[in-house]
Every structure is written in structure tokens, then in C-alpha cells.
Image 1 (cartoon, rainbow, N blue to C red):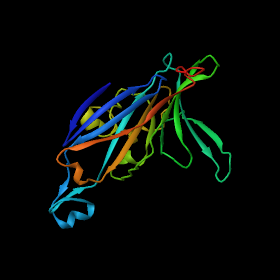
Image 2: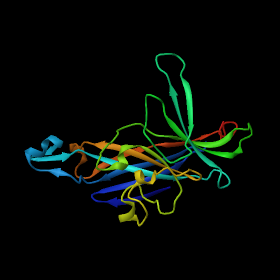
Image 3: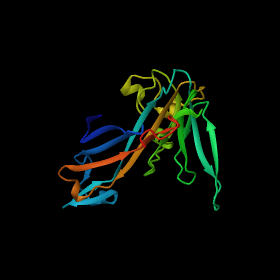
Image 4: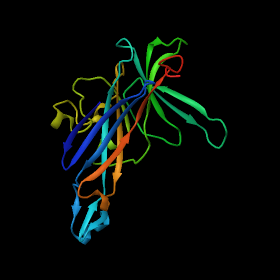
Amino acid sequence: MWSSAQIGAYNYVMQWNFHDDGTIEPVIGATGRLQYVDTTSAQAQHGWPIGPNRWGRSHIHSIYYRLDFDLGPAGNDAAEQYEFGGSGGTARRIFSTTLSTETAAQYSTERFRFWRIVDTATTNADGHPISYEISPKFGYLHRNQVEPWTLNDVYVTNYAPGEVCATHNASNCGGTGSDVSAFVNGETVTDPVVWLSVTFHHVPRDEDEVNMPLHWESFKLYPRDLTSVNPTP
């Protein structure tokens, strides 16, 4: 399933791929034309030469996904964070935390951090609660104090109809609150919504003109104990 949207000079292609084993893979591709081209040598330090007296300015693309789950009957979902502690040995202990209040979190390659949404009342044939694991693709990280939503990578909030857009929620989306960082205000999570950032750093090159080739970024939602055995042996 796919759609396309033009934003500024860019065109974004949004895909949702549904695999036979139940994995869901959202993918976004960016193409179009370079939006930021500098023409003075004083600006050259910010980018890459793409022509005589022309520099393509390096910049960040940040895409935020709003994931609202209902795995089984409404009202039974919970959000959990997993990671592995210790280092320097052959075995590392797994730690889990139920995110019972609204939470902002960061990616951690060192601690192999991931998240899952679990239905606390519905189990598979082995008696394990069904769930989906949120597996981000660790890449570029963007932190900007002027844009507070960039200071974390994953947000878990309680569902609220006015919390629609990760940024400029009130001004551009007619919602309540300025951005996703403001949605995290200590509320108890009974109906979790997960906000996930996908970020890449674009340093232009000659091949980006006239029209850029598609640049793809993605993450995956893995079924975890959704079935008791591999559904596609």
C-alpha cells in the first residue's frame, strides 16, 4: 500500500509492506529536487559542491510515525521497553519496563533497546500474550534544542483525539499541544500510542541533480508471539 506527497521541493513516497509472516514494514522514500542550494563561498562549509559556485546544503529529514495499536479487544494493550545490560561478557541480562505513564525514550545500540505493544488479555496457543515488537533502524540521530521533539526518538502517550501531529500540532493540525514532546505530561497510559522517529542526514551530491534518486528509510513491526509457531514454514 503506498501514497505520495509533495512537501516543498521534495516528493515523499510512503509505503506499507505487509509480509507473509505478519511483519509490517513502513518505508519512506524521498526524491524531488534539492531545496537548499547555496551560491556563496561563505556558505560552502555547510554542504557539498554540486556545480560552479553552487553548494548543496546538508540537511536533516525527520519523519515521525504515529502508531495506534489495538491487537485484540480494546482496552487491553500495554507498552513495554526492553534492553540488555552488562558488557564484556558472553551473557547479558534482559530488562523490561512497562511504560505505565507517558514516556520519552532514546534509541540505544549499546543496550539493544526495543519496544513492544502487548495485549495483556489475549494469548497464542502456547499461552504467551500476543504482541508486536517495534524494531527501529538505528541510523542518524538529530538533536536540536530549538525543536524539542527531536530530543528523543520514541514517545509513548495515552490516546487523545487532539494529539495528531508530532510537530506544529496546534498551528498546522488543529490539535491540542505544540508537539509530541509536550504530549508527555505524566498521564497514565491505558490506550498507548507510539510515536517513532525515522531520520536521515542528506549530504547532496552531483547525482542529486536534476531530480534526486529515491532515498529509502524504514523500520519494522515484528510479530512477537502472535502465533505459537512460524506461520510460513
